[in-house]
Length: 427
Ligand SMILES: Cc1ncc(COP(=O)(O)O)c(C=O)c1O
Image (cartoon, rainbow, N blue to C red; front, top):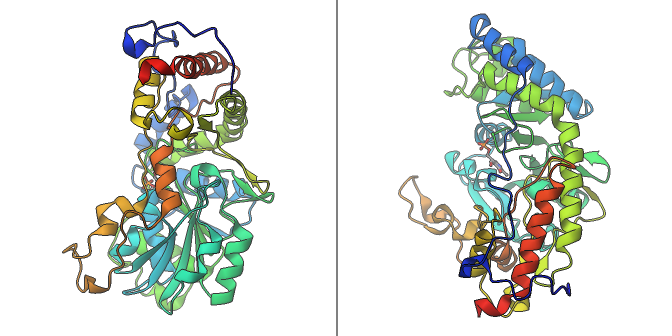
């Protein structure tokens, strides 16, 4: 518990006092602005080719560079127009079909597993670990049935899931592993890059991500069969004709399986530039958040993000310390957030929630698909850890400029301190 009286007696901003944070907003802008070279290349691409039907130009360049980024531990990389599209293609490639069950963490961004519904599969949720926020391996086996086909993991906020335990279970029951690495570009598990453990891995490149295209996703795999099926699913015509090796699947090159999900070359160019800067940004973001964590860990009402020994944070997509109202005079999170926000802190409730609180996962008769009588649905209370995390987290900026961000982090810490010292005003 920090003992500082420098703020006591100062009126909280929510009650009409001055603000602890004097630097005007925005305090965090993402994605970062383009440089002159990126702008020029985007302009030049306009007159070269604005619809790449095969995999040439910036599309090929991005895919090749991404494989190098993963230390060439994956044989194939295929771009898509979003992470969600890439996930759908991944489930298709893995053969998820009507009635198949896919085991997923109960806390994740929904698109980790929602595409399974399109294939008429059946997501089965498993609670997460209270420290890592990732799927809890000790709760997976009890959810496995004869219909289980895939375990999907999400490396939540950039923290790797416990892959050894998960791979053991997958092997024991002959299940496929899909890694959703949308938060975790550059994160590692026991020194090895995430995205290289599963049968397939997918990375969203949407604008908020540390590696961003604007809209986009990339699927990686070492399996020629999954490559062919994933290509056919989203890249009909030229790319399917040129790249599908399996003679049987090759027959369908002209139509694919009915969808076109390819990335625009503009997005690929932006992603290439973002990839070139990713390593430096990771170093800098880690430096900022390490400093922020050190400072926040003084407050007994805050539990700072914990990083397991086996994990190396890469992208660190979200910074979500937990607020414990029980340790702060039972002041509710909503009030605590409002109070900090009034002091000038850019703080919110996280947008992601436990999936067991979203209609797609709770309404049985969703009227969208045939035979939903067998749909698994969930209810509040089913996943206590996921729900507790969702109900107690604070969403704060993932500052990325070091040492430039130090000043704003210091002001944020002053705001936390001021609220801490003046809690009586909130009772
Ligand atoms: C964990 C996770 N999976 C999947 C997605 C979906 O990616 P996209 O927005 O590129 O479709 C996101 C996007 O935020 C995500 O955070």
